[in-house]
Image (cartoon, rainbow over all chains, first blue to last red; front, side, top):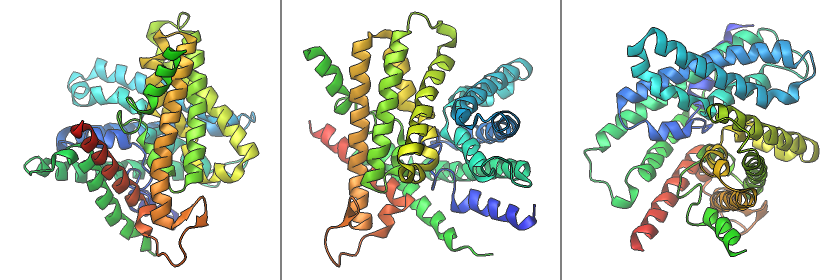
Length: 202
Length: 196
């Protein structure tokens, strides 16, 4: 475990391989909920929380259940079930203990189960930080850190996009480009500018 | 027979999952760098759609309404695991190219969407043709996008060079090119719809 590795994960997850703009995970929510800044922020925070928690849980399941018993081929099924159950649980807890918080991002929670970013990060962690049959040194911290960084990358892309789209509301857009097509083209230009980080050397 | 044909065609044109319903865009954009990858993804997703549609509509009277989504997810994930293992065994190169996007078929909105919107209230044969049609529609959309991207981004078709000395537009095969192509295609289909 070294500091350099953490820096590399940070730069890679937030900028170079940005979860939305370069890996295309969670694209549906990115296009659908980025019309205004406030819901976009709520969605991003919810996604960040769920990604972090679910990658902790899936790490433990992969490390202590699937690998020792030779069940690695059950990865997809077990991960998605755990994520779905976890999201349901969080929704119930939030509704019970904090109604304002539930109103703030409760409606986005069920959507997150089928957000590819959550399962994507869990799968990515198990691909990157595990060798064939064991965890690499510091694997848990790397996984946790990568999950947080992916969440930060998601939030960054969401905030930029919603800022741009709020301004576009006031513009005169060709009718065939209204809404989705234009959102994709904006995302394309953003993705191009994020691609500039590719030459980052340290 | 005509009815089945109708179920089949609906997925290809009128309710095309990619261009009309805008579902399942994540894998569409990520793997559409070459025709081979697009075809591989399309066939894998079609198999999952077909299998999960048939099983779910066969069990539609047994599955309790309140926990139907987890049940659907288990069925879908089973088929995805089958695809994953088959692909790893018989075509490791394709498996490496598609990477994490194979397990991500589980959260592809098309599959869960068809289960929830169609298979859970239709007969097995109807669901079979619906799944087949949606799968073929998705594959055709993938082929269209990956065709455009391979020809203009790499200057090849199925890995073969078309014109000697043609300097490809590299940006099209990068992530930003995928977003640009899909944006322009969606605008194009909007234009056609408007003309009608």
